Length: 247
Length: 222
Image 1 (spheres, rainbow over the protein chains, first blue to last red):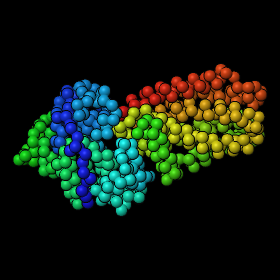
Image 2: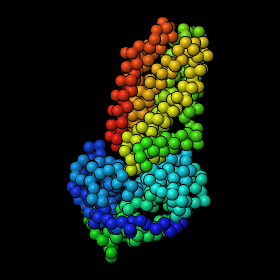
Image 3: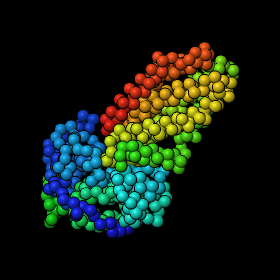
Image 4: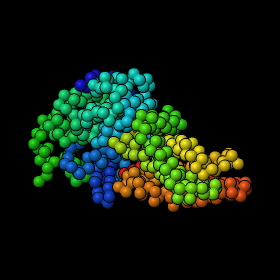
């Protein structure tokens, strides 16, 4: 379902050591603390799984990293630049898959992707749009309106939107939601290939065994704090599940 | 892509969505024409010609609010606005593009609704068509500047439609009073448009364009 992605430009680019650095980050939503004193460094080229129960602060963490919301305390850095002062152009290096499709349902898949590609300054928009549609297995349906798509197909267009500008850092919030088994397997392979090509991936996922299988490092968030942070090699999923579910 | 190109790209997207979905323009034009007919009949069928300016304003106001709601809903639906917020551009560009899209819709409404009002009220626009167009255009810029900003505020609230009208109408009161008074003087008393009235319109436009551009980023944050 997910075919080979076009060659990455990331491998040709000199990168700082950290793709992401959070220093004592705190965030409140409706007066409720959602993230508390989070300090985290994610090296360029890492594949991090963010795990935790509902309301643990996983999605809020990704929204802070993409700059959709600002922290109440602390500092967020992407590629060595603080998001408070960074030029908006830094967002060109980041792709984001959220809970919602973030697409225009009245436009076709091709029009949606071409629109965002142009906004991100992608050269050769038509070629790149077709390439990414082929990658997510929707080239033949490219001219159909997104509103006619199933949940899984819409999710694949959403993933294509996030990847069309070939980002160095991909933030994916439950990217497997709504995908059938075949698409899910294809996306796993795509993420693995992207990571092998040097891209940094931070993925929120509820499927612990899957996360431990494809990511290289996993953190567990609990009540807005980092409960554990470890490489995924030889980790027992039951142990991680126990941490997520708490005492 | 520079800021101007980004704004035009966003406007082009709005036009394309409207062309494909046809969910806004037809609806608001019908609403505006209905307002003219209902108010015209309510005023006795043959009201004074200059009353037409006030009735036209009512039609523009209500159809405008509907425009602002619908164009912002397109962005909120499925989280597309979030995709724009994280795109590599100044968030003021989103405001500017949405403002232009709203103005295009409002001008399209005016092109249809104004002749309807002129016919219905036997309103002799030929006395000062350019002054009428100038006053209405300046007023619509201010109205759209406020409406675009507050549609972003209201769209994140559960009250939505009712809230938007409640926020916009009091704020645009100076604009509506000033432009209606100018048009009444122009068509009833045959007096030229005064500098004070025009000054109020220009000042209103300038203040709300600048303030809206500056605060739009904070309005968008959830």
